[in-house]
Length: 271
Ligand SMILES: [Zn+2]
Image (cartoon, rainbow, N blue to C red; front, side, top):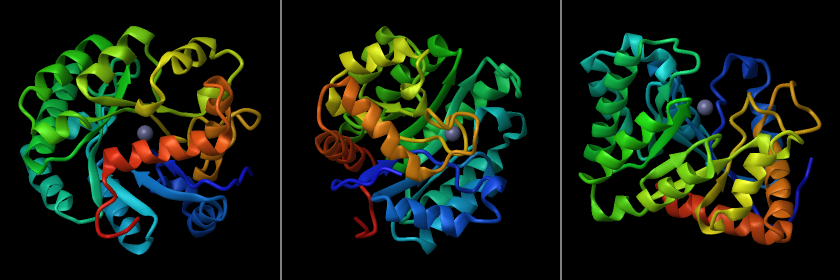
């Protein structure tokens, strides 16, 4: 466990996942003990969105995002919009997510994924909230939707429109997303020896547009790849990133935390 001076942010951890049912409190405590000061729990469906808000109410350092993941888009109805809107009114909600398109798994039809994605981008506009974007093998459609969406949002939101989480596309896409107003979410794969593309991309991006995450319980950093991931491991992500961008750990932590603070705003007087 790495714990240094500067606090860090895990901007994407699924602490609502069943794999934490037996020791969720310990997992959260370990994160706090490691200096993780901000954790964002994204919703996957209505139940996990509700649970994310509940956890954010319970823990000072936890924030929620609410949304329907593209895997669950087949169940999308207009009543989802109503319930998500109600949840988004909570002072603990900092984003709409995670939403997007997944043409790799295709657990939902592409038509339904697009319907849920567009509806939730509208929700973000109405609630003036940034979006947490899931993109797997769908870069062309995701970027087209985001570039269209950005034209209709407030000026303040335009500069901090959201994050392409657990970024896995190419440099051109990252640069285009940053130009559109997005941040790039760097997760555990930055530590994989095979991930030279991602490492090269991270080295070329402006550090002011990078935020860190674990995507727990998935994407566990090296050398624990394959095991259950947890938020305390975001410090390993920060460490790998710091080596790649040739900065020391603390300034990397400081800058990426500041970026996350700018993006999500950490409401409710919590800090
Ligand atoms: Zn996720």
